[in-house]
Length: 98
Image (cartoon, rainbow, N blue to C red; front, side):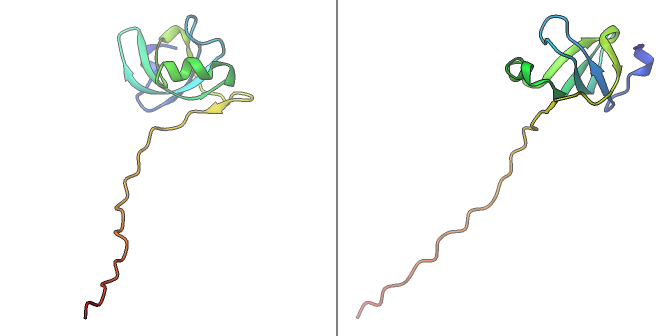
């Protein structure tokens, strides 16, 4: 792909010659001069450990990017979302003191 074809927020198919064994799909987060930072969204289960080590992000050269296609037997990366809920205090019974 050419730099002009890559847009922030777009889903692209990619391959990494060093870190991952299989192709994957990622969302473009940042564009550099010759590469793009991708948040990995879908990948082959073979690469699960490597994806975890990379914190679901990788920089890939434009020549290793292509239009996104769904992968067979792919696994979807989990988003690191934290939900905060207010904890209710347990109801207390007042003891009658007579």
